[in-house]
Structure formats: C-alpha cells, structure tokens
Length: 585
Image 1 (cartoon, rainbow, N blue to C red):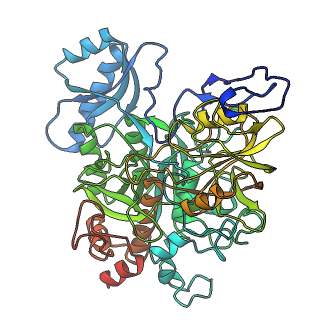
Image 2 (image 1 turned 180 degrees about the vertical axis):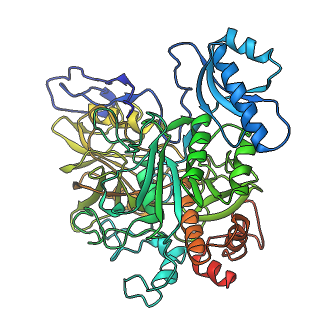
Image 3 (image 1 turned 90 degrees about the vertical axis):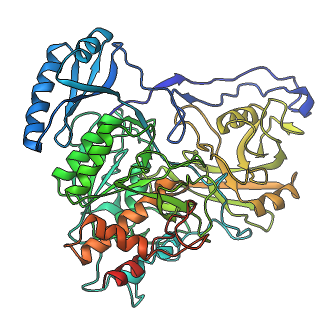
C-alpha cells in the first residue's frame, strides 16, 4: 500500500511571558506547545496538484486508429501497445473496451507517438478525486440541541429509512430480513474507491473479490505501507451499500449494538482500490478498475469520485459498460457548481445530496445531467476500526449535540469555554490561559488546521467549532484534521447549539471522544452509494433487467422534490426503493 507523503510536521513553539494568562491583544503563545501537521495534498475534496512524476514523464492516454468490430479494435490496441513500448514509453495499462493504452511519456517519446499513423490522439491522464469526506460542519447538522450525540436505536439509519430500504426487506418491521425479499442477494456491486477495512465486522462474508490498482496486488485494504489506516472513504461508501445485518462493530457508549445495515445487506462487494492515501487517482486507473469490475461479474459500479472533463476514451468506456449490462452510478460533486465528470457522462447516473429533511445540500452540484438525489448530509456509516469517534459534550446540566471532526484524536478533556473568535491568529482567544481551556471557534475564516494550530498555541486543550457563520451555499471546505502532527480533540456543533454555547462562554465544559468503528460524514460521495444499493435491490428482484430498465425504474419512481418534474437541483427526485420495485411490478 502507498505511504503518506508529508510536507513535515508544523511545529509551532515559542516562549510565553512568565504569566500563564494574557489578553488577546498580546498575541503570546504558551511554552512547549507543538501543534499541527500538514500533508502534501489537501484531502479528498480539495484540488491538490497532480502527482509528482519523479522521472519527468507525463501520464497520458494514447488512442489508436481503428475501424470495424471489437476484435479488430483489440488487435489494433495490441499493435499500438507494442509500438508505444518500442518508443521507450512506460505502458501502464492496455484496455479491452477502448482502443487505447495508458502510458507515461517523455516529450521526445510523445513526439514520436504523435507522428505515428497508428496513433489517433493523445489525451491527458486527468487527476480525479474522491467526493467526500466532509464532516458535517458547514453542512448543517441536525437541529437537536439538548440530547447527546444521537445514534440509531437499531441498525436502521435515517438515510436507510429515507430511501425506503427496510420497507423492501423488512416489511413487518421485526428487525429481521424477510424470507424471499430482495436483499441484493446474487448481485455484485463494484466499489471503485480508496479500498476497504476488510476485517470490519460489518463486511463479514460480503467481499467476493478485490484488487489494488495502485500497488498491483489483490489486497485492496484501505491501509498504508506502514499499516496506518487510509482515508476511510471506501469503507464509508461500502457500508452504505452492503453493511451486514447484525454484524456490528464498536459503536461507543450510546450506539446500536448491531451497528448499522446497508441498503442491500446481502449484496456481494467487489473492492477496487484506486484512490491513494490523499484521496486522488489518475483517470487511467479508474478505467482499468472499470474493466476489472466487468470481468468480475459486477452489475453496479459505484463511483464516489470525479474531476476533469470528458474525453473520447472515457465516453466510450462508460458506454461500453452500459452496453455490457452494467449500471454506473457516480457522485455529482461537492463544489456547489455544475455536475462533475464522470457523473455528467450520458452513460452514468448522476446523484446529488439532500439532508434528512429532504432539503438539497448547499454543496451538492447540480445541472441538467443530475438524475437522482439521496441522503448525503451527516450520514452514518462504517469507518476503519477505531478511526471514528463518538463525541459527547457537556456544560453544567446540558449536553449539546456534537460531531467529532474527521481524524480527531480521542480522549476526555475539561476546561473553561473560551471565545477564540475566528481562530485566525495567535491573538484570537480572549482571556486565554496556558493552564488549558476549551476553545470556541467560528469557522470559515481560515482552514481548520490553521485555526486549530492557532488556538492550541494559545493553550486550548480541546476545540469546538460553531456553525453560526457557515455560508448558506457554495463550496464545502474539507473540515478534517490532517493525518500527521499533534492535534487536540475537536468537534463541531449545529447552529442552535452554537447559539446556546455563545451564551455560556466562560463556564466549564467537558468534551469526551471515544474511538468507534463508524462515523458521520457529508458529501455526494455518501449519496451515490444509496442509489447503488437500491439498484442492487432491483436486480436482486429482477435479474433479467437491463441497465436502462433499472435506471428508468429508479427515475420514474423517485419522490419529486423542488419544481414539479425533473429539475437541475433534484433531478427526478429522491430515490425510493419500495416505490421502484412496485413500479417494476
């Protein structure tokens, strides 16, 4: 597995005056404090630079001229691959469904290829990104204020109920899968993502095949070379689709004993690891994974990633999967703009996000290509074991609802709640003390990692991010902590809790974070697998259906939201499993 690439530890330490308390205007820092850490890449929803090519080669897709049937195309591709290698270019993949190869070339090799009569065109091998994970900070959290962090009373999450999945396979509501009901049994769903925590209890017996397209082996675990967990993106996505009934992991002090259950709890999972530990990949790697999914008998391909633009090769590759009986489902993107590629491809079903009240998520990309929406705000699902965190906050006799920031350290911390404003400087905390306190920060002015470093240097032992300044629309920041460095436990709270906390600044607060095997995350990455799971239920009931018939059933039965009929914000509407099955019948 690939290693993390770090710019290095951001170690901020300086001497403070003899007094351990100071005013915000002094801008002093506490002695001996080390805070922060930054990775080379910004994360799963950012736009980091293309992967560095140490040998100076450019990653490209080389297309070859051909006419006629696929047999002839395969022969042309084989000849083209041989010629490409003869130029000195490093061929990384030879495709079956399109007349092309992926390679890395020097400028001289590219010139030779461009002059060849075999070569039709040379396309950029674009960088694509995972469309999550976005902890629910700028995405609105549930409105509940006084209760502790809510968790399901059983395995059925809010999102699961919203898409009607239990009504398909637990019609009598007894918490047991109904005999003979469609459960995804016999349907293979291919998750092209960051890999999976293969030993998570929720996936016992679920995975029937896996391949790591980054390291070229069959271990698609979401781990680094030193055994550290990867980003967890693929594990979260896979749980939404096919977490097993009654196989729960560690849910913390208030979680459901059985954990959670996926939309299609008996579907079989194929795991293709393409996203590296920073959450990015090359387009060519995804194309290779797609052909592998087909070879493994997948009916559904779930893509919670995207970026770049359509090319002739990608359009042909997605069309080929549809013609061969596969439905590709993709996340629309989290930038609040137009639908990203490949979700915008005509052969791909694009999915946007709504919250538990069926309101469009402000970050969810929209446009005429949007097909459906599904739950994508504050979604509970599986996470690499021990990497999630159950958060509980208490002030006097109240327990405002909170969510752990992604990758936050766990522990129990207490101290006075101090107003640290925007957290945008070393003078942001009013009346801070090096004896320790809990910082209250209004988000959005600076990246979370910068705000965290600033308030920790002023003595904060834990951090609470409010949401009263969260924008009503626009792009969603990646509000997770870098995987390296030293950080304080950190949580976010909703707008109502923020209002309450501002009225109690100066009082004692306690923050408790317990490691668990699940987490709440927001993003269209979470919405797409809901639709993938519902598609698996339809094929489980009717194996004879074509991809277009499945798509038609999903779209025609969706709950219409927004403007009557299909629109650019909700597409055809919210995916409904029971109604889709009834439409087929």
